[in-house]
Amino acid sequence: HQSSIINHQSSIVNHQSSISSIIMPTATTIIKSLASIIILPGIFMTLMGLGIVPLDEKMSDIAAPFLTPSHININIPIKPFICILGPCKILGGLSLKGIGPMPEWFARIGLIIAAVCGGYGHYVVGDAIVGPFVYFGMICSLYLIDPLTTTTTTTTDKSKSKKE
Image (cartoon, one colour):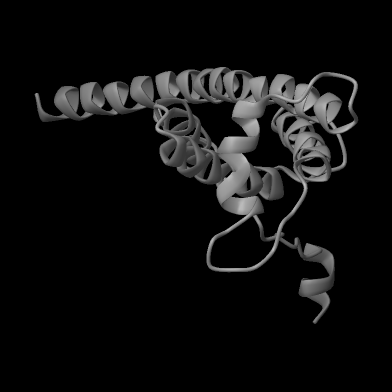
């Protein structure tokens, strides 16, 4: 009787493991697909920075705490700022899909920082911060369900170790 219980428990663990191996990649794909939407605002930011599309004044207000901080006497122009931020968002979004030169670990960090800064900018102008907060959560959740490995494993040649 005990062996049948142990076999049943083993069967449940194996089943849960197989479900997890199916769900996690699916969840990762869905989250990365949703988070890659950042490419669209990145395109429009780049076009605004280049002067091809009219500049959105609301965007200037949201970026103002970072462009003209009250405690420092600097004034960064909005167009060059979004001309840099736009392509960074594009590259970050593409990196989540495995496209482009930017490593995904770097993209995740940049997208988290962009979400936090965007949330703060929206807060300052009195907008809802739900969008940046949800985006922040999506990117952070990737660290739980799709952790990146930053170390490399080395394999040893068994024939060499036997000789020594």
